[in-house]
Image (cartoon, rainbow, N blue to C red):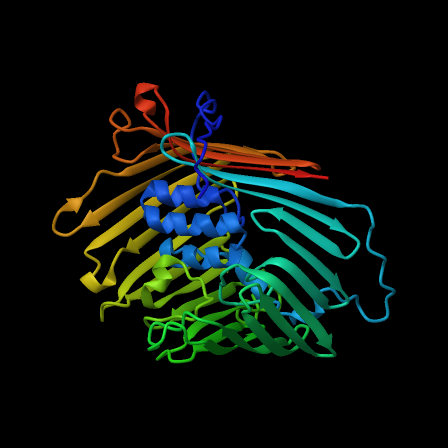
Length: 491
């Protein structure tokens, strides 16, 4: 992490305006603002928040969503919808049959993206810069990742920093420096990797658009054998497979001499009721009730394949997973009900930590109510539970006001001071928004009052977002606790 020079970020100026607060205004992808919200609420720990933020900074949205589902019991609908349409990696850039492929633009275009996180002293804790330029069939990335990519009619070639996205791996990988190729052969494809340390990977796969795909892969590396190996200089051999269908993703990776493979499982789906009312032919069918579910699991033992890179909590757990169920009834005041369970079994124990959450929201668009109850650990008979309720109101078309309260109850101690939030969100038709949230974590604003500010400005050439949490607002002496900033310039 680059800390040679501490840079003071200009987030202190956002303390002049604040008002009432809101529950989330609309479904949106997982972002840093949501992670800060859970962190400020005490829903996730600092370590868990850092794991999610690191993945978001790298652009690994799908893996960050998996962590959010276990740590915060929050579903990521965008990740589910994206993975529910599997396609073979060798067919991603093919034009539809019967159409004439268009010539790619020779005019360079792209963006410069900068992301930075702020620590409790108001200085730059970590940052990431990326320049991406596209021209003809080439893509050049410079900055935190240095990569030259070429894609043409399903063929792919990469040179530089190669990792999860370039190798189409369902399991997160370390970053390697080398060359990777993929070549389609009808519904089949063959792919390979060679890095500067002479690590090699070979992949063979088959896939049909909309139906699914399957792939088998082999890794070979020199030296530094597995922890179970007698010789640290032994060559490393590993073998695995991964598959996608419209309702599942499954990957298994086993390294020679390891007692158990690394397994990743994703199951997801949704269905709609017919919306009819008991055979009444006079009344027309209403909007269907939508049911959806999602299951996530990582399973492994002490050793994992050398090139796999798992988040700390996943790597320390022999079983790590979650289950979520949801129901939405648009005709019943747009009522939504969700149930989530997170399960973690550490490597060094035979116990399993289980966290349960049941929540719902309902009401017309201008006034909605939400409520949830969370069992922090079912293994202790839910000795600690979180109870939360809130309201959101939209008195004007682009303005959303609201309030929420969360109370933690522990047996036999009783109720802790309530966690109160009031905030105010204003957005325009182009999805730019400003949000201010007042937070009283101990229930007494005169003792501890915090402010979280969120800004998003999106235009044709510039995107800018800034999230900061301040403490000391009760003394009118704001001190930054944590923050995030991103600026993207397109050309």
